[in-house]
Length: 55
Image (tube, rainbow, N blue to C red):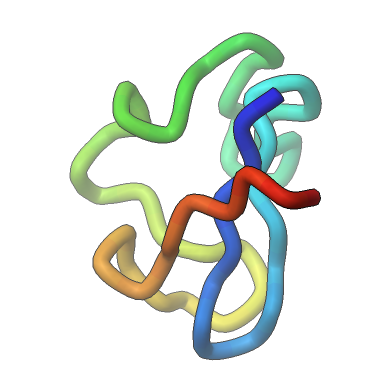
């Protein structure tokens, strides 16, 4: 299970949950998110996320 964490606000993106706010379906990997996708909490772009395999 891959999880990506926003360094600005701590939001966790998981492909097991998707992003209901921005209509991202369950199963979409972080790498496959559209370029315009931003953190649903703080608006940070994908550059502000890092992969955390320990969660």
